[in-house]
Image (cartoon, helix red, strand yellow):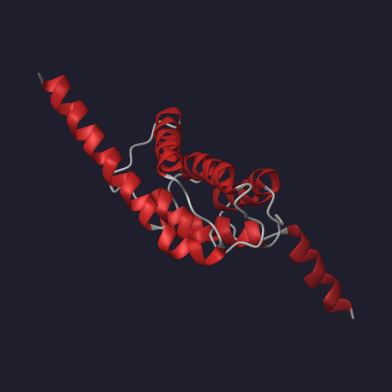
Length: 162
């Protein structure tokens, strides 16, 4: 009996999450990006899988729409890669929430990811993961500023000698 109640609650939460994702189409449509109901369901399934594989729990259920709104204006995302990119970003988000030991809020991590995706990563998920987010983890673990990078240090030291 408890199992059926849990299933009903989970299905209701999934439906609410899908509806919330679809409501983001109102904003993302301005950038020629929309998701179908089927794509939204796949995103929720991917999120649930990512949560499970990273040993995380999401209470509010709004990470996907925050990621959509944080990335829909990207010059590197089109209808051609929209769903795949969102799925990759959701996976990266939950993995790096763990890797950063929750030292950043959800909004701060999404903002960092969006800025780096658009900037240093030039729209590459691999570069975002392998360079930008790995550097973020190193900086946080070593007590350095979030955006501290060796390239900036070199540039500053060269400027000091000019």
